[in-house]
Length: 100
Image (cartoon, rainbow, N blue to C red; front, side, top):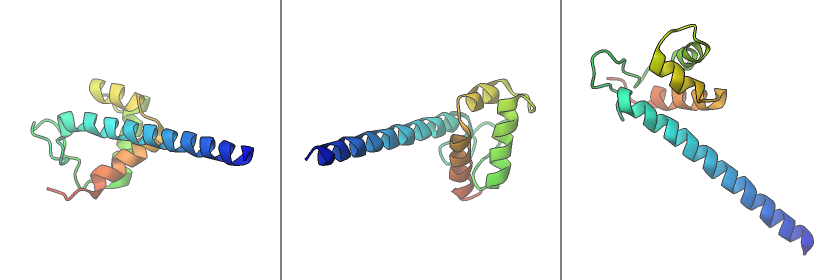
């Protein structure tokens, strides 16, 4: 009985962690929407479209922003809040959108 209780608590903790990670990923993607559009198509002509870009390219650009090797004040701040896995997930999200 004790083992079942420990397993149930363990599964609840795992589920809660997974939900928190998913919410964090969604929050980061929604922050991208502000400038790059919710469909990956920016409304401002000075902001690049992300929809349909190559996943590796998007990921590498976020890494460059994060490291400061590619200068851009807002993107540096945004990318420094993300871990590597989140950058990969965001790159995959925008790469999967239909290009425009």
